[in-house]
Amino acid sequence: MWNSIDRAVELVAKALALLGGLVLVAVMLLVVVSITGRALIPFGLGPVPGDFELVEAGTAFAIFAFLPWCQYSRGHVAVDILVPIIGKRRDAVLYVDHNLMMTAVAAFITWRLWAGMLDKMTYNETTFILRLPVWWGYAICVPLAVAFTLVAAFTVVRSWREAFRDPETARAP
Image (cartoon, rainbow, N blue to C red; front, side, top):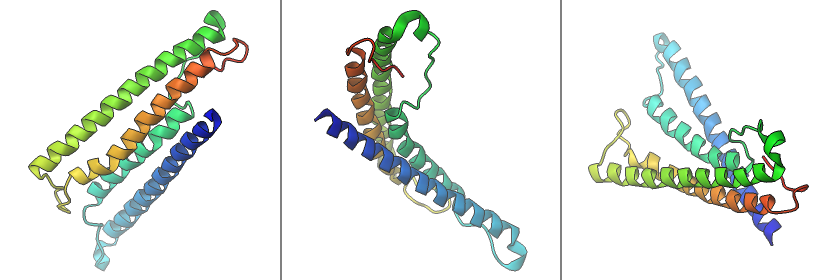
């Protein structure tokens, strides 16, 4: 059963990262079109209206889409300098603590993102050029932040299981 849960978490995290990558490519193309339009103003073209607003929202989406995969694949910064000194078992136990802290940070970010979205909804704040409701950007990132929190919680369980196996098979980051 554990393997099927692990595989499901991996697939969701990877799918979100791929979606984030597609959004980042779309943002890149938007920037190219907008800059090209600016260069061709003498020929009657122009920049994409609201390009900065769209790039901002797309980049935020991509970042939040990448976080679950980064956490699942142990992509966050780790310092392995102490492994020879403290051993694999203690290092694996430290990794449980690190994942607990990351889960707390992810939950905090999710909570504050939700609160920020509610605040933007209350005051009907809009973007300057396109007049899009600002809360939309928050709303598309909240589910991604929830996914990040859930993946981080999963990594706590995963690292716990790894830390308390046979010391020779304990897998540290």
